[in-house]
Image (tube, rainbow, N blue to C red; front, side, top):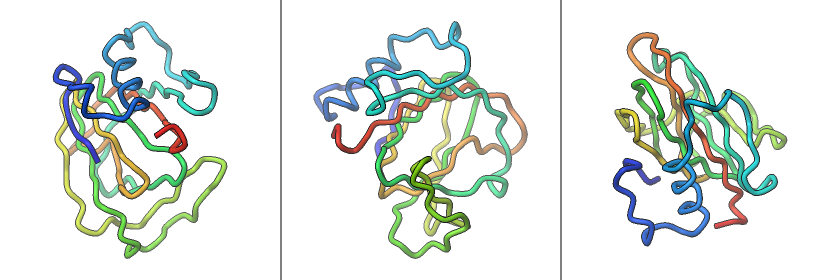
Length: 153
């Protein structure tokens, strides 16, 4: 897992595909984009523009992916992201769906919280159980998720 702010990115620290995603996030006007999915490099790298409402932590399940990593970027609003290392000890709530590349856990062992403001980003690898759009109340957020196939890393 990597956590940072888009204004303070040292590109030398990241693999090329993650640099590509962070550069895209820094240079794109997300206020003018409609919510939806947009290809960046065929199906290997794509972006999801999401307009969400935060909810209490108990209303979201932790998730993991097997074939893609997430670069999650908070464009507007305030949210908390939960993250923990997936050591294989979490009870499965929803079995792995290969078409969506997602598995949901009932809970995440040793989950830590990332308190995010606009500009914060997190990179979640397949070994990172994570949940997003958490907050103590309902707030509208605009979240951008760049999905990168692990074959690109």
